[in-house]
Each structure stands twice: as structure tokens, then as C-alpha cells.
Length: 418
Ligand code: EPU
Image 1 (cartoon, rainbow, N blue to C red):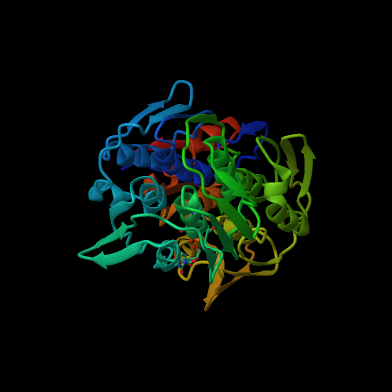
Image 2 (image 1 turned 90 degrees about the vertical axis):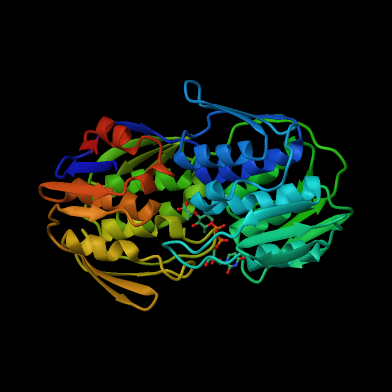
């Protein structure tokens, strides 16, 4: 199994290019099912999760061509012959539940293996299923599968108890061809949802307000293919901002949409990092002394849970006491015990982590317990004395394109081994 080995101590310099957002591309690939036509995704991130969702679509007879040479994905969903994606593939990736909405909308049914819990929490899908029911579907759970059937879907008002990203996306996709109008209130407002709304409108849907807390979908009868270029990955950009901060370096990050990064930029600025935006680039200067801060993860536009572990890595190196409160997932502090092995001083108190900055970290073998945890451990490795070996790196490959090459280009002493 691959691992990443980092020898800490190098300052970073130069430029890094950000890839397209994993969390945009996955729902967009699922939404291509709706089109029943050819959809092309330009500048697609060549990630393990993208491969897996591609295989899942192939298991229902879609044609999927992932072209690594020009970062293009061509999906033809005209040939889809069934609505039961391969359960072994589905179990590999939680985001496969995003196929439920499109399959129900286009074919009136789906049967999909229930996504289990994962390292960061139990992650139920009750809000997705309640929403499908509100649109007139009959949803049943049994024998490890969730099944949905609907002779026809009828638009309705849906209020989400929590602004779930996945539920908002699934319900938008389910409602695209429903009769009449659907309103999703208390919807998640993440930039990736706005991107999905754009894609849906490009294939002929009528979605208004995606990326705000109220999304209206007016049902249409027919959809078509399109070519779409997804937004840049704000979490990858945030991770590289964090790498400049933890190494007290100055780097340039290309592929930054300032609006999407506001919560991350605000907290790094409060810490003492100087961030200048020039068009779609950010110059991140962390060469001055940094200060401890307190952070609470929140739905967008609050501070993203997907940056919680990386910001914790920085705070471990900042003199003084910082507090991070995780409000989105109930079990997203798995990285703490691994960070402690590198010498970090962190105490967990319920949903909060109290971090005392230390002068030095010391390299050892640590395990990536999930995608963002793995990225945060690499960040710690950039400053730890000696070598840090991050194992189970497949988690990181799910969501970061060639992370070791990008850090190597910035001057880090980093390599992948097995
Ligand atoms: N929740 C429910 N019921 C539901 C749906 C969600 O209780 O029906 C709860 C979850 O258990 C969780 C919270 O609501 O505690 C937030 O979950 P949400 O549905 O918003 O998250 P998601 O759609 O499962 C997406 C991203 C995650 C990201 C979260 C939050 C994708 C493919 N995944 O997950 O990305 O952390 O939103 O922003 O878009 C990552 O990239 O590392 C990652 C985990």
C-alpha cells in the first residue's frame, strides 16, 4: 500500500495549480445520468473517487471515458439499462448515494446498497429519503439496500432539518423532471451546489437559487448533453494555504475563487497570514509570527469541516492556546491521536479540541484515517524533524491530485513509496 514520506524542515516557495473540485465533479457525474445524452467534463480532476464513480456508472451500462492525457471525462448515459449499480463499487464511496436522485428522476426507480458509516461519522441519509417521499416516491429500506419507486414525481415544498450538502444535491436532481415546482428550504449553500445548479441548467433544467438557502426547481420534460468545466477546489486551495502557514513560507496559489475561500482566508488572516488575491491567484505570505485562534466548523459560508484537520495542523505549531469546535460531523477528530504521535499537544473535550502550540514536531509513522486527516498529517510532516511516513495514503488519493508532486514542486522533500 502506498505511503508518503516527508522529511520536514524545507521552506516552500513558487507556485501551485489547483485542480477542479472533487465535491463538484462527483455530483455532476451523477447528474449526467439525467441528461440521457453525452456530457463532457473539462479540466476534470483525475482522482480515485472519480474513477470509482465512473465504474459505478459503467455498472449501469453508461459509457464513461476518463482521459488522463487531457483531463477530460466523456459520459454517455443514453445506454443506461438498469438502476441497480454494482453494490461492491457503491460500498467503496459514500458519494454513490448521489445516484439515487438522478436514477429516480429519469427512470422512476433505483435500488442501491445502503452507504454505511465511515471514519468521520454515521452519516445517515434520512433527509434525502424524506425529501424523495415528499416528491411522491415510495422509499423502502431492507436487506442492506434502499429502494425508491415513483410512477411520477410531483414538485413540493421541502424543508431540510439541516442544510445537508448531499440531500440538497440529491433533491435538486430528483426534482429536475418532477411535475410542477419544488422548493428546497434551509438548503445547503456550498459553492459546489451552485456549480451543480449551473450544470443542471446547462443540460436544460430550470433551477433557481442553487448556492443560496432556498432552491427552486421548476420541472422540465426533456434534458440534453453539455460540456462543463467545474469550479476550482476550494479545499485543495485551502490546504495549500495551510502548507504556506505551517512552514512560515510565501507561495502563490493559482486557481482560487476568492468568494469561495472567504471563511478560510478570514481565519488565516486572523492568525496573521497575509493573503493577497490577484485575479484567480492568491499570494500567501506566512513569514510573520502567527497567533492562536478559535474556530467552529459550520455549513457554508461558515468555516468548512473539510479544512478542520489542516487548520489544526497549523495551530499545533502556533504558540498559545487555540480551540477548534467541530459541529458538522460527530467523529472528525480521528487525526488527533496521529498528530499527538508527531508531538502535537491537543486535548479533546467533547466536540472541541484544545490545542497548545509546541516548538517542535518529530517525524514518525502515522496513518491517514480519512482524506483530510491524511492531508493534515502531510502538513505536519513538512515541519517535523526527520521523516514522517503517512500510511494509508489511498484516502488522500481520493481527493487530492498528485499531492506529492505539487508539494515537491514547491520545494518540499517528499516522495511516495510502497
Ligand atoms: N446528515 C444527516 N442526515 C442526512 C444527511 C446528512 O443527519 O440525511 C448529517 C451528516 O451525518 C453530517 C451532516 O449532516 O453530520 C453534514 O452532512 P452533509 O450531508 O452536509 O455531507 P455530505 O453530503 O455527506 C459533503 C462532502 C463532504 C463534506 C460535507 C460537509 C461530498 C461528496 N462530500 O458530504 O466532503 O465534508 O459535505 O461539507 O460532497 C471531504 O471532501 O473530505 C468530505 C467528507
